[in-house]
Image 1 (spheres, rainbow, N blue to C red):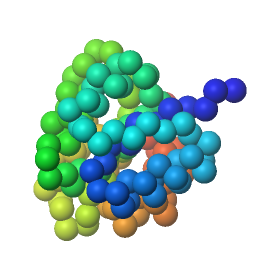
Image 2: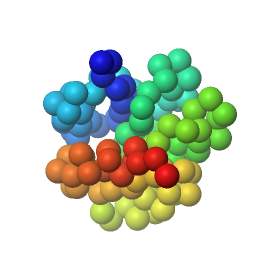
Image 3: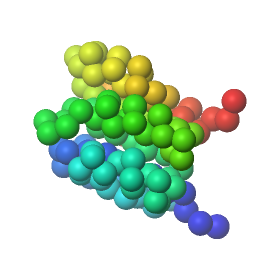
Image 4: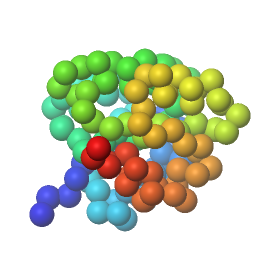
Length: 124
């Protein structure tokens, strides 16, 4: 059976690389995306099972990229898990409005990743 693909969007090495390693431990193939502008094109080409995005970025607005992903007919079905620091409630709210199906704190993302994956991938 083919391993499902997860796209992980991050700018900071931690927790980005930790998240990549954790997903690989959970038998996911992972493609790291460090340039958020390539997210939609990469998702169109790679056809991932899900996207996990670190909202705290200095170069680009990750929530805008999530919105573009959700508005694109080819990628709108791809669930997005977003995470940011607890105190960044504005980023968390913006991610929900942009279409993230799960929004978590960066403190919780690694510890509860299997539960977040289950929640994001739940078919309703």
